[in-house]
Image 1 (tube, rainbow, N blue to C red):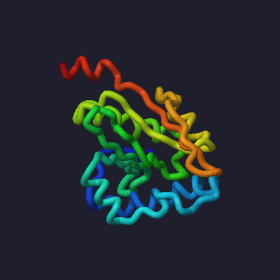
Image 2: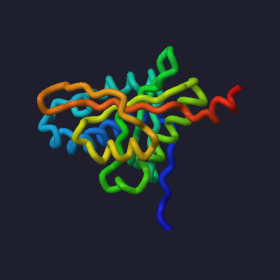
Image 3: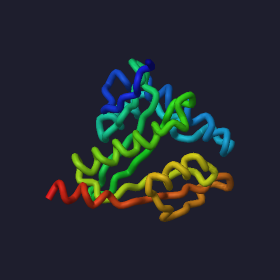
Length: 167
């Protein structure tokens, strides 16, 4: 029987694995848009450590290997900003991205009072758009960043049941 993937909060020792995974996963995005200067490919280890300290970062593990990750912060008005959802290419299309996203949403709502969730992706990133729509996100804005890239912002409200439990 194979090992199962577990999801938990990232810890300091995970930082290098997360950065390597991020670099691997964003290669396809860079190729799709013809731009290898995108922030996920240029982020430094120090920048990632700062994100670990300032927000919630979850990782998916297969044994000792980090095979997925997602990050989120909640602002003063209760909007959770979700970013850098990555899953190792060999484990994509098996529901792990959705599991990571759901786990992050739940934790941000329960622990930090998130009332809505917001994320973005590129207009050509069809796999990302399908996943986000399947998870209940709806496009709320489009911003043209360059001749080759428009960012689509997607949002959804936190589940009402989360509020009932906290009342």
